[in-house]
Every structure is written in C-alpha cells, then in structure tokens.
Image (tube, rainbow, N blue to C red; front, top):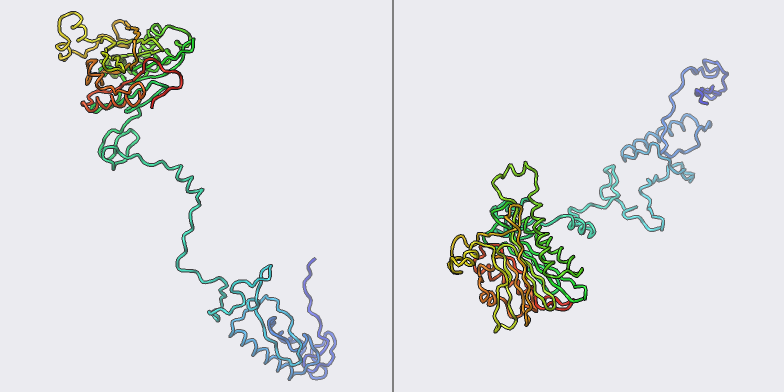
Length: 467
C-alpha cells in the first residue's frame, strides 16, 4: 500500500558538520539555525557528477566549485538545446580527471537493421543541424511518378462500363432509353429492323425498308426429318396489317406458332399439306388471342381493328413441294435451269385478284388500281372467315421456292421478273440469295417492309447448309 514520505533527521550540522541531536534548533558548535533547511540542488540527470551523490567529506569550497561547474554546464546545455529530461543516459566513465565525458545522443549513433545493414541516413550529420528537429526521412521529390494501374481493376471497371450507343444518323448524339437520338431525334434501329437467319439448307432475311418506322414482318425457318428419315425443310413468312393494331406482334406470333406446329407435326408422320393447313389454323388462333385484351385498353383506341397479318408457308421434302397461305404474301417457283419457266404458286386474297378471277378487269388493270392491295383474307379476330389455301407440287427438276411478302414482289411481280432477280446459285447459297433479293427491293425504293425466304428443292440431306 502507498505511504506518505517522511523527512529524515539531520545527523550533522550542515554548516560545521558537528553532530546534532534530534530536536535541536541550533548547532551547539557554530550556532547554525537548524530549523532552516537549505534548498536542494537542482537535479540534472544529463550532467556528469564528479563524485558520488551524498559525499559527506567535501568542504564548502569544493561544494561551491561543484555548484559553479554545474551552473556552467547547465547554461551550456541550454544553449545547445539538449533537453534530455526523462532520458536514461549511460553512466559516465571514471577517468579521474573530474571532467564530464562527452555526451552522445541516441540519434548520433549509427543504427542497423536486423541484418546489421546500416539504416539509410542513420548516423549521417543532418545539414539542418541546430534547428532542434531531426529529419531522418529522405528529402521528398517535387513530383511523384504515377503508379501503373492494376490490370485486374482495369479489366473489372472496363467490363462494368458499357459503351454509349451513338446515333446511326448523325454519328454524334447519344441514344436515350427510348431509342431516339438526343441530338437529332432520329429513331435508332430496333432488333427486328434487320434480321437474318438460316436453318440447315433454308435461310431468310427481313428488313424494315426505307420508308416505314418499324418492321411489321416476321418469319420462321427450320428443318427436320420425316418418320422414314427423309429430310424436310420449311419456311413461314408473315406480314402485319398496318391498318390494324399491333401488326408487328401479330406477324411474330403467327410465324412462330406456325413454324413450331410444323416442326412438331412433320416428324410424327403428318402429311406436309395437312401439317401446313393445321399450322395456319394454329397461327390464326395465336393472332386471335392478341385481341383478348382488357376492355380499358380498347377504350383508348376504340376505332382500331384487332391485330392482323397475312401468312404464307412452304414445306419441301425430297420429292414434294407444298405451299399454304392466307392474304397476299406469295410463293414463287424458280428452277435452277433458267430455260425452264418459273411460276407463281399462290393466288392473292385481294381485291385485284377477285377482279381478275371474275373477269371484270385484266391483271394489269386490276393491279394498277389503288384498291389492288386491299386484302380480302387475313389472320385476326375480325377476319370474315378463315379459309387457308394449300397446294402441293412435284417439280421434275431442282430449283428454289421464294417465299416473300409484298415488300419484295411489288418490285418483281411476275414470275419472270422474280426469276431474273434470283441469283443463279440460289440453291447452293440461300442466305446470300435472300440478301440479294432484299437488296433488290431496297434498290427499287423500299417503300414497305421486305421479308424473303429461300428454300432449295429438293430438300438436301441433313447437314447441308448455306454457303
């Protein structure tokens, strides 16, 4: 436990060193006042003492010399700025001279690391000595070299940031979330504006054209095998009715549904003509379903017709060619031997076709009329009556079937004009040929959406594809 410190009695007179008794107020020898305690000398742990502390044998002269020497050394210490209070210094050497040995600061001694390697700058006199501050760190440069970026961080940040889409028209403005340029206001291409696809030996291309703001056409292509292993290829092309609501949704639903129905029916052994008829019926039901919308949605557009589209499809096997359609999308037969005549395989469900069939107008007169492209048959909830047309053929020579919307045949209406536009190697390069035919329509003006599929006949073995 802690105790309060007690002051020890003086055994001798501080003036004459005569023994005194405890409780004496004056020295009996010299009369020194023992009640006055002299001030203790200042404690300077950094000073070198000439003798051991508490030496009782020194006289008054020695003590005065010692005090003078201590005062002088104290002044020198203060002038040098050595504030060593609280530092434990090594014991001074005993050389018998009574002079204080040289005092060393810890920072004046050379330092080493754990491997006895001198520390940088340690023990080297500082050029700024006398300032009272020791600068052990090397001088800092005015400029620091830039550290190379971590490649892992660079790759991560690069992958997270998506490049901004630039307008295809002005090549300067950024494209907003709605698909329009913030600089010129130009609508940007949509996913369906240009679509190309091939499946085995059949290929198709669809393009928005040069005048329409969106592509309302759609297609489906595929290949499969009949139960006996013979190959079968198919193509379905649909054209949305622009005067109806959601024509793009109608064409897409019809094309996908009809294509899926054919790929499911043909491997089961269903006759290609019956399978195509069932596929068109299924496509009509899919388009009808689009009209089943909430009543509140129809209130915003009460005068718009239900979603609608036309459809044309073809199924080709090793010896049979089948086509089916509703509306004015067409299928053409173009033989590889161009000396043989081409043919149009479908009849339009249109006002012009009805005038020609009734003998009221010639074909040239009917299609020159502004009512020529008014269709009389389509897929949709408001169609008068669904009457799918199908026909089967057995060509005696190889060739291709061109399945297309009126965006193409408006620029190659007759079978002869279509044959002239089809490349000679269309059976070997169906995708290339489809691109050429779309380009033919765009070069002619591109007033409508353009969609075309090229189907080789007979169907080549499995594994053959477009070159």
